[in-house]
Image (cartoon, rainbow, N blue to C red; front, top):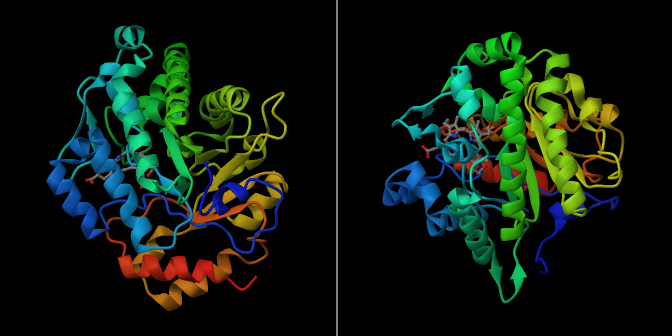
Length: 357
Ligand code: CP3
């Protein structure tokens, strides 16, 4: 399928681009009044996720307001554990909750890779988003599919919800019952691989693994329990879809950028992207990973609650000593917050489109 704008995909090649492609994590979401209106019509956030046509509607909202170079599937990472039968809910104004968290050996032993039929609504949403992006056989921008990483999913599955304090129940299981913890990860590796394969078959042009919580682990534990399972998934996807870009985003794991940059055996040239969080530094990340890996990030999402002069100053500082035209995707260092000012989002996007390079 031809693209009207394929800048995002070209950031995974050796080409020197006229400007970096831009998209924003959580670009569709609560900071947009039109998103809140659609969510109200859908009933709830989960109802929205279950409706392919509503998903496509909110996917387009940020693209219609801003000059963005990629679209991301509208869904959530917790669809996979929900399909495993853990019972996902979102209380009003609260984070996610699981009715049946994995708290003991029996629960872990009963866990299994879900039948992908239970996630067909997500694959249908991918196909609907793709249709919504396409007119006269030309696709507006590439469509990114995504999943949580095996470790980050395990955090929610074991803890039963979010955690203000580094997922203590999860880390205790990892330390005291590494056998049980590894079983959860192994199931998540198989489930996430099948889930992402289904998204590619439904039309995703690139994939991203959100490892929001890998940074709660010590570096050596991060590499064994968070990075290694992600790399098993990437190796399988690279073997099946050799030209499909895959981005790994581990928050708080700048200590392991060099290990993240390693390609699976037999996939030396596979298009690999790494997300850089706002607590890291683009120039240091480039030094750690070398020239052949695409970096994505890393502006502080809180900039979108400040003012134009602050944004302009911080963009220049974050990009100092870094070449934004080679293997780089401009993005935030984590998701947009609900209090972001939509006008400042537009300002940020325009500043990035007109970077002096
Ligand atoms: O980026 C996008 O625009 C695509 C959509 C997307 C959502 N969630 C929609 C969403 C993506 C890529 C995610 C990923 C996700 N979900 C992550 C990893 C990325 C990250 O931000 O670290 C995590 C940890 C989750 C789990 C999750 N979903 C939490 C903790 C919450 C509640 C906290 C919060 O920010 O509200 C959600 C809900 C959620 N996912 C919303 C949206 C738009 C808000 C729901 C609402 O409309 O009320």
